[in-house]
Length: 462
Image (cartoon, rainbow, N blue to C red; front, side, top):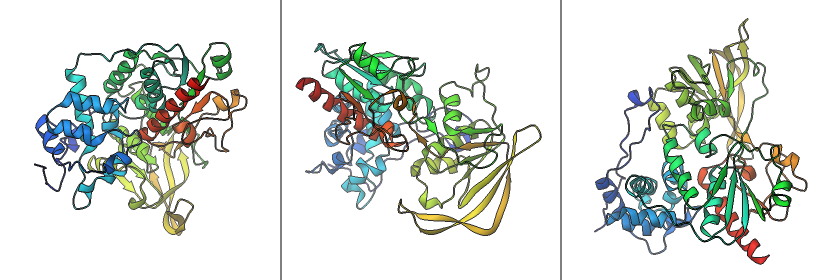
């Protein structure tokens, strides 16, 4: 019998006044009993609307049926047929706007907790299964993947399952891309990411770190000298944006990219870290997306009083609602309808305050949201010693500048077919944030999956 409870089983988590002092995972995960109970809320709809909301087309009703029967390993195997990173997706995908938004249980209550069930299945597999995936027989063809973030890892995994010899080139010293340098430990433990990457290695994927494509090797050299028959660019969007206001060059001003990289990848928060970070006691984070929430929550865990400064209202925050609620629970202050005008410094060149102006909403802009406009006579000053700019990112221009014939958008995104990822260069494909600008993990994975299928067709046709 289906479980007709109108609400999801709540996710166990650390108490807010405990977790805001540590970097351990906030959400603790379902027990087996909770997972089975939640799975039984699925009605096994005839048309499977939830699948249409999944960019990588996981067979959601099929894996949930197995979960309801307690067949957790089988459930994981169903997910793994479509997704190379199930433990990651179960934690960071915005299910509320994707698969769960299509769930019919959400019409008169809350949708099935698809993401929470995916996380449980993946965690159960990682904790209980000792069987490694079988490496497919090689088909003799070689493909290079640039970047080991979500799109690159997905493309590499799908191609490896088809028998391709795949080499992933990563600029940093550790594979994982934004999953390791951008998303904090308390949202996505790095041990989880490494287990997912090790699964790809077991499939035969080779990962070369400390290789900067465009500097160490060019795409031309990959194709002409190293014998790669196709190339996928999944290099992400790691170039931070700033406001171009006075004072952004003061000491104590960070891009969220740098701040999070130092915290997440270099473990700057640990005592005795080789790369400690100079962090403030009064911190402002400018922006309202998931990256802003991550930066603010990291600063809070370093002992700061943290204020998020956002020029629109709470209703327009682009961050996931869950992340906003967690930030508020952890004691982070939100200043809505507020826009920084100038960062002020002391005699030593450190941040001392931010001059701000109150805003009000005017007519809608190109995004459909009401444009914030200044409110006359509303300037005020926030006393601070650190400012983190979380205003979005764009693709690094290095690959564009070193690859002849690769067409890009004015803002730097690589132009690629939205269905196949094919670029203006024959045999070169691209996907994820390198094409779209900063977006979600699962959308990047979907792009990598589409490109893998297109590369397979291209090489078969040759």
